[in-house]
Amino acid sequence: MHDVPLIGPYNPDGVLAWETDGPRTARQFLSDVSRLADSVPDRPAVLNLLSSRYEFLVGFAAAMLRGQITLLPQSRAPQTLRRIAGDYRESYCLTNQDEPVEGIESVFLRSHGSLAAWPTRIPHIPLDQVAAIAFTSGSTGQPMPNRKTWGALTAVARATGARLQLTTGDQATVVATVPHQHMFGLEASVMLPIVHGLVMHAGRPLFPADIRDALAEVAGKRILVTTPLHLRACVTEGVRVPPLGLILSATAPLPQSLAQEAERHFQTEVHEIFGFAEAGSVAERRTIDGDRWRPLDGVRLAQDQAVWMVQTSYLPTPVRVPDRITVDADGQFVVHGRGVDQINIAGHRVSLGDLNQKLLEIEGVQDGVFFLPDEGADLVTRLIACVVAPGKTVEEIQQALRRRIDPVFLPRPLLLVPRLPRNDTGKLPREALLKLAEQQAEGLSHEA
Image (cartoon, rainbow, N blue to C red; front, top):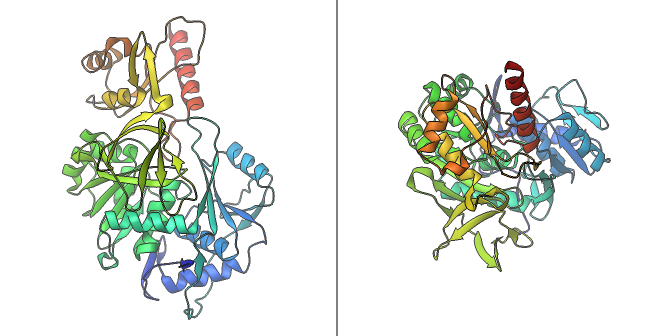
C-alpha cells in the first residue's frame, strides 16, 4: 500500500463536523477541499491559522492535494509567526482573520460554496508525502521543526483509535479544548476523527461553561480531548456536562488524584497520551490504573547505550525519548521527567515534575509550578514556586509542602499569582515564568 484515503469510512451525507451554523457532511467537506485546492497559491508550504477546526482540516487537506506542507507553529505569538515566515519565505498564510501576518502573503477563507457531486473516488494521499511540519514547544530550548508524513499521521490515529476501542458505529463526536495546530491537537482532534469516521466539533471551548455548552451541542457518544489544566477547571467548578464516553488528556502530566476526581464527577474513564513532537503519540494509559504507560501497537522502545529510542515502521529512523524512563520486560514504561527536569540541591536530587505533582495535590491549589531562577551570584540554589490558590496564604501552602517534600526543596520565594502564563497547550515557557516571577518580586518590594 503506497497511499491511503483522505478520510475514513463516511457516508456521503454523513456528518463529518459540527460548525457553529450546523453540520458539515463528508460530501460538503470534499467539495470545500476541492474548491480551496483550486484557489490557493502555488507555494511549497502554508501557515494554516484557521481558527475553526473544520476549516483548518479543509485547508490541511487542500494543501496536501496541492503537494504543500502545512506549518504548525508552537504558538500564535506574533514573533513566532514572523520567525516561521522568515524561515519559510516561499510559504503563504491561510487565515480567516482580517489582520495578516507580517512578512507573509495571506489568503483569506471566508465562506463555503455550493455542493459538488460526490467524487467517484475519494482522494488518496501518498504515505511518504510530508503533510506537516510541527515545531517543538520551545519550553526547553529553541523550537525545532519536525516533519510528519501522511503515513505517520494516519498510523498514529489508527493505533490510538484501536487502543481506545473506537469504532465507526459509535457515532462519536470529538470535542477538544486543545489547538489543532499543536501536535496532540492535530492527532487527537483532527486525524483521529477522520481516520475512524467520527465527527469533530469545530470549536475550541476553553472555559468550563463553554466546554459544557460545546458538549451539549452534539448528540450521541462524546469524547473530550483536553489538558490537565482544563480538566482541573471543570472539576473545580463542578460543571455538569452531558454523558461522556471518554476523556483523553495530554500535553502535561495528569495527577492521579485529579483523574480520580474527574472519573467520579463525569462518570467516565480518563485516559492519557504520552508523546512528543519528534515522534507523535507513543503510549497510552488509564491514569487511575497507575504510572505505567503502554506503547501503542507498532511502537517499540529500544535502548541505545544510555538513552531509549522509539522505533516504528512509519518513522524513517529511531527517535530519542527526551524523558528519563524505566522500561519493563513487557515493554511498558514509567516516565521520570525530562533530563533537564532533574535538580540537585545540597546533594539531594528530585525532578521538578515530581515537585509540581506534590504542589498540585494540596487542597485549594488550582495551578502551580516550581522552577529554578537563572544562575546568579547566589552560592545556594533556591527554587521558586508560582501558585494559583485563591483564599490560601503563603504560610498555609508552605506548611502543606513541608509534609510532602524534603525541606531543601521548599520554594524561596513562593509567589501567589492570579494565573500562570500558560500557552495554548497549557505549557509554561521558561521566559514567561521568569518574567512573571520578576514582576511579582517587584510588586512585593514596592509593597514593602
